[in-house]
Image 1 (spheres, helix red, strand yellow):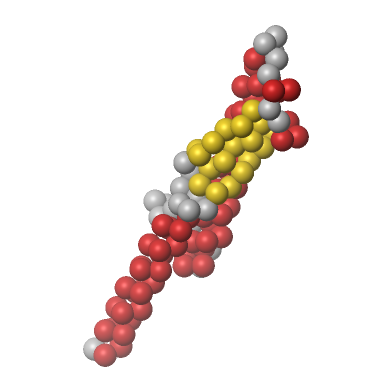
Image 2 (cartoon, helix red, strand yellow):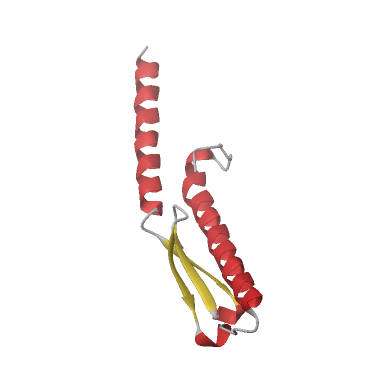
Length: 103
């Protein structure tokens, strides 16, 4: 019975640590870019887009599709990096297992 109480305390402590780590992800920023940095996107660890920066040389009224592709590439780059950050930060709690809905 004593082992069960100790195990429950450990589980509760791990849950608290996981919640804190998830909250901290929201304070971390990641930057993705495209076109050699002419388009940059910042997201936080919760995958919320914080800013998009487009340098004037990326804007060509004759080629709007290229700008759209650059923005899309930069967003996907930033979101991919946010996934890596979440996997690194939260993976220590799951032993590398990917648990759907956890992060």
